[in-house]
Image (cartoon, rainbow, N blue to C red; front, side):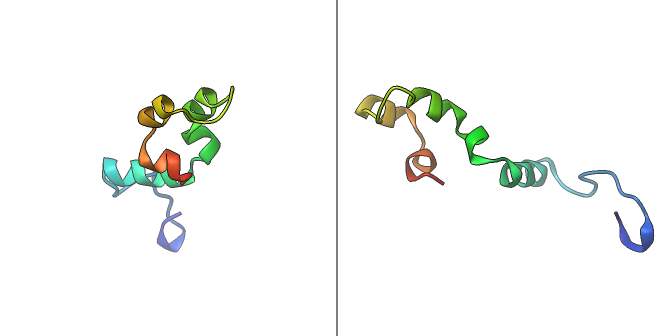
Length: 61
């Protein structure tokens, strides 16, 4: 809700980049990194799999 009881559209006044950042901050890690979990389902990260992952994925952020 906006000020004084006025309704505002979701994302009103935000750039596309700001909207992406907000959604990313609200997305649970298990959804963000589903591809990592799928790759790792059968065991620990190999050098090959580690090369496919981003630094954030390897750091667990």
